[in-house]
Length: 298
Image (cartoon, rainbow, N blue to C red; front, side):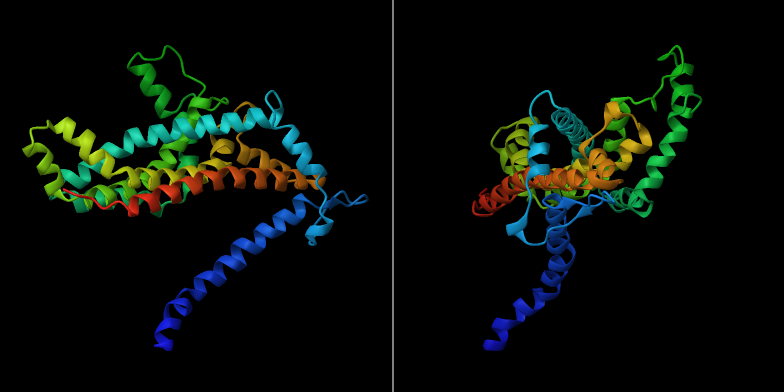
């Protein structure tokens, strides 16, 4: 019995060690930089490992610039707006695709799933770089839109356009949303939907009151899966725009980590972002636990 009691803790031990080595320790290093000092001669960050000796000057400065009207406030608001719009776009595209795969695709389901997985075989950065050729003034997108009369002259998609950044985020992350949505929708018992139809509800009403509520956890899981990396994404913006006017918080963190004493500011921004995302993640975990305690009844 004692051996059985130790089996699962030992089974989880490698994963726990992995998290400690590659998450907790690096995150503590970021804390030590954020609350550390700056070398007066070489102007490099000096981590302070002892929490009792931490300095809060940099963090206070960052928090002051997070007030409305300050530079970091603008960047954070822009980031939340971009991520929110991109997430809505991913849901608008991904949910119908996942619903079709789960409820209506039969013979073609395996083929369509393979087509959805294919983008994972290509580097995300390479897929973003491919869009540069498409969005150039003489690229395929501008030529096509001019030829069909939607544009009178080529549009500067790569000239710091927020729409281009949001579109790139949608394109890059929508496959990661479709798969968890499909898994959730595919597990919904068909008799629950049939019961709604048998009770006189229309197909739309059945979808609204049966399918959609039952797929809520898949929506939340997929949203968390793509929203968290979106908040820290900086290369999409760098590749598609590169303009300070579309800079997101990930771009700011990357910029500050590139040089000298500003790395302490970058580390402080990482902590602020981690706290905000931790709050969103806590809501997701709370919602998941609450949903698991509510059995589905027909």
